[in-house]
Image (cartoon, rainbow, N blue to C red):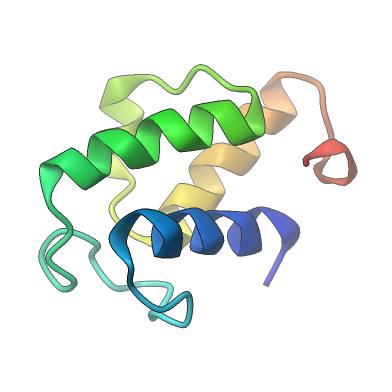
Length: 87
């Protein structure tokens, strides 16, 4: 588990009041019942914590911890910040 995934798990757990130990590949919306309002809070919190602008179309496709981690990692790299510079 990398630093980005750990931070995303913490954000998901805070917003949804789910355990941070959820399976990385579980669908946040279908498997875990995350409501759309939580999804919007999650997007805002990820943008703030990682200092990113996350395109809506990419966010809606990132439906698991694994996919969110890959998306955020890619966006961080595109910004020119390596994982060591995150958070």
